[in-house]
Length: 280
DNA sequence: CGATTATCCTGTGCGC
DNA sequence: TGCGCACAGGATAATC
Image (cartoon, rainbow, N blue to C red; front, side, top):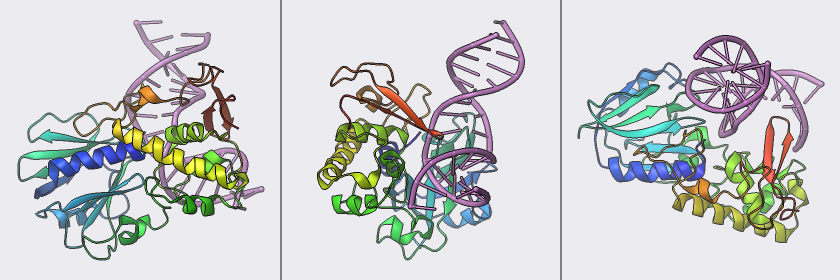
């Protein structure tokens, strides 16, 4: 389940390996991979140079110059893997970016929730953050790694929904999913089912700080690869942050901080792991 | 607004 | 050993 730290790891890997290279051909074979528009439009970026790769929340934006931005979202099971032309394709390979160097970037996605699309009306090439250049991303809140405490305070004010529901709402903060919402709440010492608007200013400060600390540590560890092995970096390697999870997936195990059993609460289709000793 | 449910999809891991 | 099924969940839409 790629969230911000995993997507940022992929972004950095792709930047290092492919920026400056020219796309020779893009072959999309997945029927659902490009579903927002006519897939033949992707021919526009063939022959273009990859100028840069940006990220907002869990979205990747490939800048091909000439106002062409290709957006990618990995959703649940998407991977972007480096390969060499001629390498055998793994199952569920839905798109192949073939560069003139002979290297390839392959989009692999068993559950097919992931997608690729060309930004409909990017406002000029090169300049400005993705959220302002790509209309499809305009609904997203500030990127969770760059969010200011004041933005978080404003986004939570008056909201009665559980804190975790707000953290995973991409309109509030972009980039946080199930794993990191739990870890961030633990780091802040806040129950995930607290109504978001009920936090006092000091608690919002703790939440903002925990968001930065957790996400930065997760990026440094190159993301979390769970037991299902679904997240892999561009080289196919697993992340290491799962070794530092303090609550996610640990129900019934003793809290690393206070020793009480980690609990799992459910509401609707969502659930959260939390420590009744450390979070209030 | 918020709570809830459904949709998309496949690999895994469980119970029987 | 094998079958069937619940589960996993990110984004989005619909309904109440």
